[in-house]
Length: 566
Ligand code: CTP
Ligand code: MG
Image (cartoon, rainbow, N blue to C red):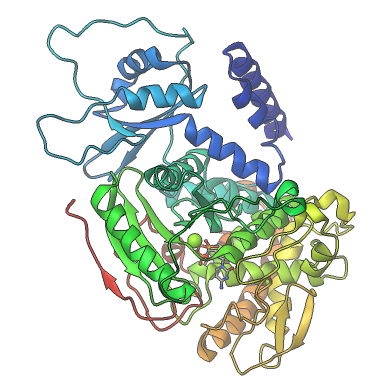
C-alpha cells in the first residue's frame, strides 16, 4: 500500500515537472502507466525512445559535464546510468529529453570520429569525448532545467542472488516472498527503455526507404512476464500493417495504389531473402550490433544479434504477427489480477531451479509454454481468476479487429472492462501456488490437450507428449518440442513441489521464532532445490543451440556471420 502511495506521489511530481518544463507529451504518457492497456504501454515507451539518446562516458563521474553539454539541445528530464561488460566496465548514460526534436538536435550535432575509420551512421548511440584543450566555447542552454538525479541501475543483469535470498528469508510470509521475487527479478524501467531504443534503431535504419516501417518489441520484453536479462523479440514490418484497418481505409479504400516490385517467389522465400539482405545491413552498418546470425529455415525465420551498447540479445523476425498479438493477450492477463505475474515468476523460478527450463531451446518446456500452463490453471479454477480467450474473442468490437496476412484472426476485446469479468477468487498466493502444483500433478497429459481458448482440457489431437493449443493459431501445438521424458519429469517435479509446499504452508502458520527463520531457507525458497541453477545467467550471446526442436526454431541454422567488432 505504501509503495502504491509512493508511486502515485512520484507520478504526480513527475507530471508537474513535465508540465513545468513544457513537455506535455511526456506528462500525458505517464498518466496511464499505473494500469494501462497494451497500446498505451507500447505507445508510451515508443515515444519515450524517440526522446532519448545513449551516450558512452568514461564513468558516471562524467554525468555533470555531460548534462551541462547536452542541455544546450533541450531540457533533460531523466538520466540513467548503466554499465555493460563488468570486467571492462563500459559506462553509458541514457538521457531522456522533453521532446523528440531535442533528441534529434543532439544526434544531429554528433560528428564522426576523424581519427578512426568508421561508417558515418547517425543513430541515438553516441560517445562523449574529452573536451579539446581550452574547453571550447560554451553555448547557452536552450531551456534551463534542474539536473535530474542520475539513476544508477542495471538494465540487463539479475539482482545478486545472495541479496535476493537474504531479502526472501527475512520476508514476513510466503505472500511477501512471492512479491519480493517478482519485484526484484522483473524487467526494470531501464531494461524496458533500452529495449525500445534497440527497436527504434532498427526502424530508423530503414526509414529512408520505408518511412512507415515499424519495429515492435514483443514477447517477454513487453508482455509483463519478462525478467532482467531476457532477450528482446522484435518484429519488423516494412509498412505499418499490423493487421488492423483504419476506419477510413475500411470504409473508402484509396484509389491511389503504389507501384511496387513484383514478388519474385512465394511469400516465405521472399521473407528469407529480405531478411538475408537485412542481416547484412545490420551487420555492416548498425552501431553496437554484433554477432549477427541468420536462422532462416526455421518456421519463423529470424536474425539473431547482440547489441554491445545495450548488452542485449535480439531475435528479429518479420513474419510473426500472431506472436506479437499473443504478447498483448499475456499482457492483458497480467493486468487483470495482481496475483498473476508474481505467481508466474515463482513458478518459472521453480522450473528453472529444477532444470525443467533452460535458456537454450530444446526438448524441455519453454518459458512461454510454462506461462501458458499457469494461465490455463488460473482459467479452469472453480472461481476463475482469468477469463478464457474464447470469451475475449466473443466480446471483440469492430475496433478490435486484427487479421494477419495469412488470414489468422487476432481479434479479441482489448478493453477488458467491457468484458465485465470479475474474479471472486480470494485465494492467497501460497494457496494458488499449491493448487497449481497439485493440479498439474494430476493432469492427464497423456490424453488431454490444454486449451486457453476454452479454459478446459480437450482430447489430444496427436501423440505429442504435451499439447497446448496455440491460442491464436489453433492448429499448432505450443509445446510440440517437449519430449515424453521431459513431460514425465515435469509431473514428478510438480508432485515433489506440492509436498514441499504443503509442509511449508503448514510450518508458516506455526508461531515460530522470527530470528530462526532469517537464518534458514523457508517458504518458496525450499521449492528452489538447486538455488545455483535458479541464478539466471546474464545475457550470453553464444548460447548452445539445439537445432531440431522448439516451435519457433525448429530447423537448422542456415548460416552465420559475425561482426568485425571483438
Ligand atoms: N510465441 C508464440 N508461439 C510460440 C512461441 C512463442 O506465440 N510457439 C510468441 C509469444 O508471444 C512469446 C513470444 O512469441 O511471448 C516470444 O517467444 P519466446 O522468446 O520463446 O518467449 P518469451 O515469452 O519471450 O520468453 P523468454 O523470456 O523465455 O524469451
Ligand atoms: Mg523472448
